[in-house]
Image (cartoon, rainbow, N blue to C red; front, side, top):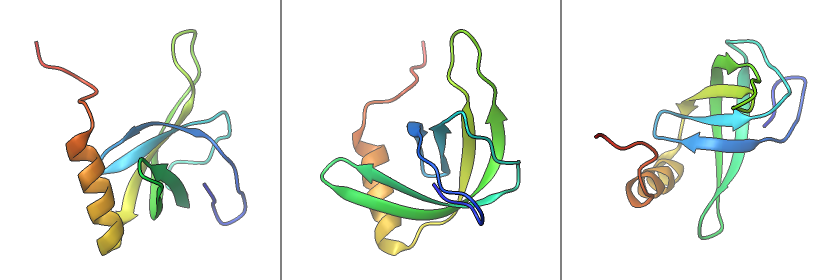
Length: 95
């Protein structure tokens, strides 16, 4: 992930059509614009622009990180992320 002045790595915790959670101890302010590079199964590399919308602090049970909203997903990238989201097992289940 890169902002105007920083480059750093993190682990993704969730990907959806609306955005991505990046687990990281590095903080960016809410509203910061970033470019995100991440891989999907099948050696698909996604490059997307986004905005930090929320920050999660570390706690004993969860990693800290950034909630990033996608600002733009170009055509091919949109299709790749959409296909991934449709095929993966749901993260949450209704009971």
